[in-house]
Image (cartoon, rainbow, N blue to C red):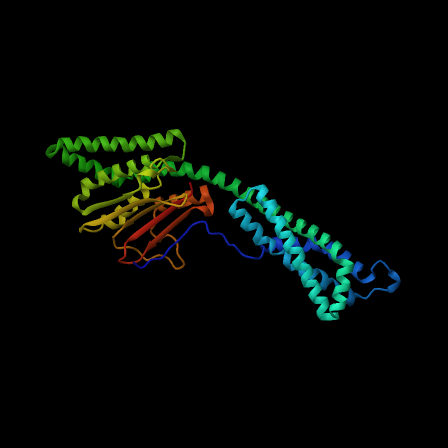
Length: 369
């Protein structure tokens, strides 16, 4: 069906460092270039005089390729950060990259000299400079790699501290929203009205509905009292089944549910109140407004080591914003679940919405193990 996807936690992976890092990188190079500017022209002999343009030319030739090549360490350190490589693997990766860097840099330098002065001059320079140039290249690599890695570590620590504080506040709000929004007044009124209607004509079913309702309240209170944001998938799906059972009293034959759950995954942990809000969104927008029957699909499957949960309906669908994102009318349920996934797992988690007018509404969550 026509679809537009929106995913959370998709930070930029630019090959170039951000402006503040480029400024720091340039400032760090200034003293090195100043010393090199003098050394490359005088070669320790001031009696030769000092020619600024010659010094600039020599510095650009010898240091320019190195300056540009080391910028590639920014995406390299970003890749290591995203892969969450251990310290040992990072050391091994940097050791290999350092060797590649110094030989690439010196090959460019040799080619520049060969093109400008001839192969004989390039070979002479290699004989005189090769060892100490490689040593200098290794030191430059270590300084750049250490600087970029340190900047990323500080930025990550600050982001994690801010996310932890925000997560605590969001968790408190989501727990309150669970009582206020997930069992909102409309749901309470409709459920109690449906149970009252059952009391006279089907007392047994009315008693079962009251028991189901009390179990839902117990689940909400237990998750609030424990303070633990994680629950077993089995418990979250049971809560969702209870919610659907109560809605089925009112909707009757209009509500068909297609469960596609891999039972081997029921012992996995998921955020509390992460599945039911997605189901409630479909009930509200796909089933309440129409009188004809519809199907709600809830699928749970493994995606490698991750867990994939899909809630989809065949309702009227919506037009998503240009460029993706949640629809304008998305309630606190969808927004809270998406934000909680992003805060807990960052870009390792996914929250995607797919919909189009007349094509139903689908939400897909992907959560790491």
